[in-house]
Amino acid sequence: MTERPPQRIPNRQLAALIAEAGFSNAGLARRVDQLGLEHGLDLRYDKTSVTRWLRGQQPRGTTPALIAEVFTRRLGRRLSAQDLGLDACAPVYAGLEFAATPEEAVDIVSGLWRKDSGSHAELRKIAFTPAGLVVPSRDWLIGRADDRVARGEPAPAAPRTAAAPPHDPRVPSQGRFSVPRQRGTDRGPGQRVSSGDIAALRSVGELFRTLDHAYGGGHARQALVRYLEHEAEPMLRGTYGESTGRRLFAAAADLTRLAGWTSYDIAAHGLAQRYFVQALRLAQAAGDRAYGSYVLLTMSCQAVYLGHGREAVQLARVAQQGVGPAAPPVVQAMLHAVEARGHAVLGEARACSAALVRAERALEAARPGDEVPYWARHFDEAQLADELGHCHRDLQQYRPAAQHAERALQLRAPGFARSRLFCRVVLATSRLALGELDQACALGAEAAQQASEMRSARAVEYVRDFERRLEPYRDAAAARTYRDRVAAIG
Image 1 (cartoon, rainbow, N blue to C red):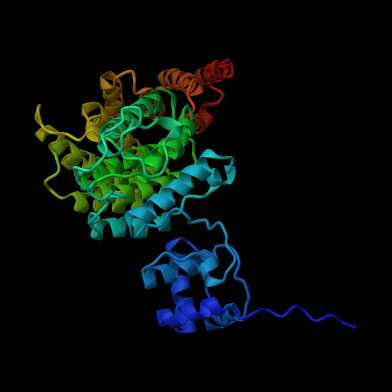
Image 2 (image 1 turned 180 degrees about the vertical axis):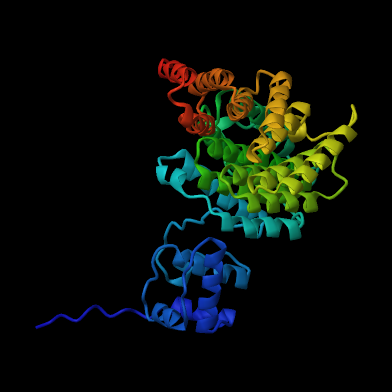
């Protein structure tokens, strides 16, 4: 006797939500397909697909999460795959959501921190998704600071009456005279966040930034992520008023962007992209429009590195539009320089040149004593020369590329070791293209030595790019000497 296949149970949860949202089966399928396209997925569902889901069939892969996101956007409340009666999954786009509220933003970013600090190696293998840049940048541009970020504020204490018993000094006081809480891992949800807590977050950011510049993103990245999980998350889930809350979200945004930056430097590009999106959302909660533009510039830099020039230009322009013309000249210079890098990747020489001219004029307009955000203070003549060198290299204009790279190396402080390495490779590449083989190989060997002392996938890739360009000259004496020097690096 042949066994019948098990009967599927109708999905009443999904049916109820379809009715609540006012979707037709075809309408739901169309929205799932559209959301898939935002994340680079070609799904092609139709009304028959939705009928199958209602009959109990479970969609595969990332589709349950996509369906949940469609309903979340329609109904204005966060819904999971389980809420729809669908199997949970780990979608490739998880973490690219631009949260509707500060509370939801904390949930999303803290989930990233926890997974990243554990043994979830697959998180670092997630691919970069160019289509995943569209929605967050759009939502940031048209959005505004959240009306309220204060959390857990207690009601004012009632005044003590005359009949109250005298205070016993042996008993810990309550309220404003309470015993100071323990710091670090003893912090629990609901603890009041102080200015000292936020100052500590800022100091930690400076420490990890210095390590990143000198030794590469892989040197202390995991320590940074663990710090975010064990220190920043309890603060975000603690108690704070409006002013403190804005500053807390701003500090958390900065550290989250740095976690993304260090992930980018070790070639965990999909993970980095997710950190950047969440840093952008935290910056919105902080009400810091200028810092949001900086996060977008960081995203643009990653897009340039990965060869997505069009997306890089769009992100830089969104940042410019979002921060407006009132930004300090140094910030304006950054905005235009990063746009120029995107044009250079696309081979758009005229647009690149125009953006670089705007960057130079903006930096020239800067005056000593101007108020400059801490995150923009590194953008000086050395950094602009660095950007010019890269642009001219990408446009195959090797003589000006060499001139600007040399200037950047002359001006750049030793602490920016990785940036100096990048400039040295740009200079080596330009010298090679100009036929100056001996100088090119000497510079390349210095860069290879420096890369061996860092934990930076980008540094290694810069050196490999030089070696690919050197391949046509492999039989020349200088090239053989280069290979011998690199082989001797321990």
